[in-house]
Length: 251
Image (cartoon, rainbow, N blue to C red; front, top):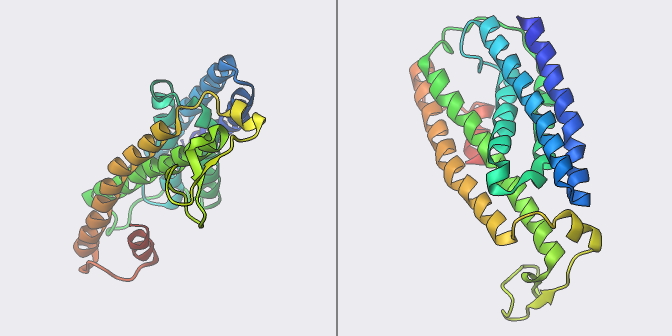
């Protein structure tokens, strides 16, 4: 099962590599047909990814979130699945390239940290594993879309210019008509074409904020449950562990 899981993992990365440039080509030339092809290839990769995670679960014999390889695989899986499900309704097919770059990067890092299937040590063999790690990986995946949507909003604002993006006299951006503000010029022609299919910057910004409203409370819950798990497993809420420190800094 381990071999099958790794094979499907490779198929998933391969499919993501193939579909990723298709999103950029479709955006650059405004071709919806290419988007459909890209989504189809992404769907194939997603199915292979699901199979890889399922076989890994079977090989482990327990909930597969006990190491960074499994964490990275599930995070990328959630990212791609969320994009595929929401792309049509949110009109965000054109950020597919960004999403897949993120997913491929996370999966590649996870593959370099690969650990074979193994049993759980007593401290990890707890229902807190499911509660804490699940909330952390889901929130991480959802919060990544805050970046994707915000980046797309800035590109769209740069492309259309006008009152959507204005340069203030200082280093900050501020609303058009404010003190010292100047209406921004439209961006280069290629950027206008590449972002023509994107929603307005305000709509993308609202989507980014929506991801924060969902992801940040879930991350907060995950950090709290990690402290509870630490007390349950090792008799202390906080141990200055690098993961604990970075989770708190990120929060």
